[in-house]
Image 1 (cartoon, one colour):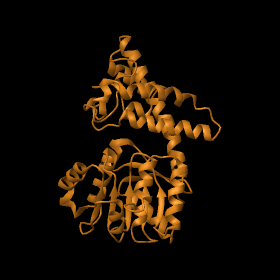
Image 2 (cartoon, one colour):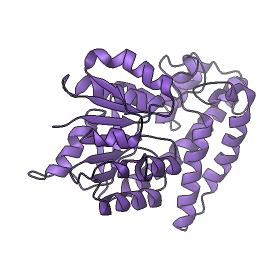
Image 3 (tube, rainbow, N blue to C red):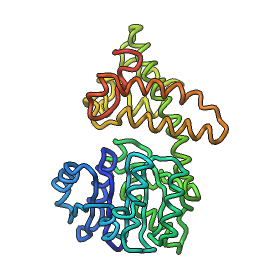
Image 4 (cartoon, one colour):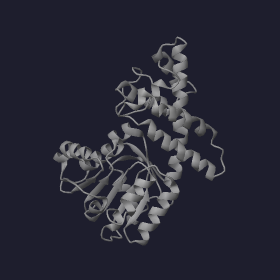
Length: 316
């Protein structure tokens, strides 16, 4: 892959994803980074500068102007619009480059990403693809994320789709790349997945709390559920009870983690998608009220990382 790279958004997920890019691209290739929180940029440079040049860009415009590949993962749709469409500091303000590849990994509504993508296309800013990720912080750190790509699958002699595959392979596992066909379809798939994972997590937390308060040893209870019909990815990778599984946030002072406030955003996207498609989102509506309470719970609000998964249903 020719040309320098840019990465915008050094939150918990983005920091890990950008780290894998810096480790895997050639040491002569420059990685431009941009984030509204300067300490994240400074920490990233200090941690990864031995792998190759890193330049902190003052804006998305500067990052785009100096790169052939730009990846972003930022909180919500209004942030995506600002990063890409701001007429002064956004990607669209950079010099036109129809070959620039822009891979947007945020979880936002599909309508917004389609509007952004179409605007960039008409502005001759490059190729914009929605490619939301799944796998959480552990997957981001390990470079094994799943990518749900709003584009057709790679085919021989088709440079664009193969370039997309090569770029996301720096951050994910090709066995978990799903090409959903068109702009916005990757996000539609991601929202459906998140609808399920967010509600399953609440059920897992409540079930563990009930079992433990009924006198069942927490590790025994995990083994029972893991080997029975209640087993899930969320149980095995985000178990809400400390001291049951070594690698999960609850056993590591909730680091790395995912804030309850972000769960509210993901569940809300599921509710909105359900209503738009004529589906009554009963499970997500119930989950949303629990996440809203969790987000303001003192045991959650004071944490920098993961939400109070442990405290749903009461401390255990």
